[in-house]
Length: 470
Image (cartoon, rainbow, N blue to C red):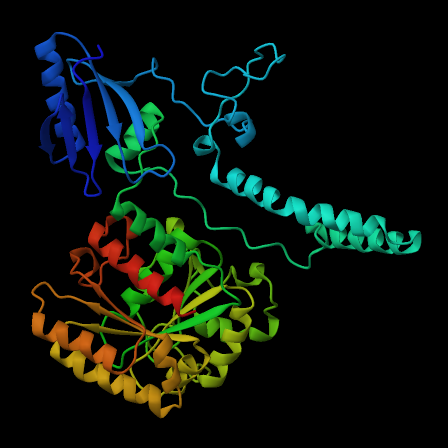
């Protein structure tokens, strides 16, 4: 079965170059390559040995497989992967390739003939450094021996202190761990191959980009953070964006995350989110701030858990409720309590830059999320929103804020280009574009699980961009 010699080299774009006894065949995917190899096995009337090569894998670029006539693939257990020896030294390598000593009287005792190329780089460096340092160490020992006994004792004490200070337990903070090594693919056919045959195929560029995005979302923060979602136009997707940014944090980052409404008019967050076991709102929380301690158990009566999204929602009071107590001062007081209990708060704001609630939300926010649909009136009021933020003295927050544009069913390419250019012109940190998604239209209840994959991807990108600014 050693002939024909078959290799399958995997490209970064998941294409596969199959070479059978020097004859190349480009395949668009691994399933296509396996089909081609299975057809070759049929022609031979027996299974076919294949070496799968993944140049992007830093640890195990080769995997040895057997493809049967029916297209099934198993690991070739007859091939033993040679691993570098860790016992060899450059001195042993000089004894000869035969593995026996040429020294008279040595009795031809077998020695390890590991060459320098087989020694891991870290060990090679250690050996080389030791060789270079030997003369200096010998000179230091000679000088120390010539010192009086008292001086030698002092030098020994200093060395002991130095060793003790190198003890990790004596450090004020542990060293920051190095970035995790590239782990094998877990998605697609590469992930399937790794799970089924214990191969170590590297992730595709798309999978690695997804991992990087999730790592950015999970990045540790120095303190609790608040984000205000702003746009002076009603129906401009503020509530939708606020909820789905929070839900993305909840699903990927975890922790105590709140999406709340603090505005002068009735919002729709409470209507579109999951219902709770109560109908209490922001107004009820404000009325009872005097009895609410900084314990999560006290907030159970006011917030609504959102299932698999792993966030809480705090809804605004219904239309017709007594809103006299919902003002800027009460918003800041409520936020002060909430901030001690939630690591991330996303505030859905109102439509008036003159309202004290709007000004308070912008004031307490560490970063802002400007939103706009791909519509002409959204563009005009986006400019007005930015001017309102500047008028409140928060123009410096633009540099750590983002813009989320939601496309319509028939997006205008020129308008979208204008929105992106405008975001760059005013100095926003990032601009994210969310595609049209029918499940988010017409006031439907939020359901993260039925979002289009492109919509999820866009919200993950927006959330990662936002986290970079926090």
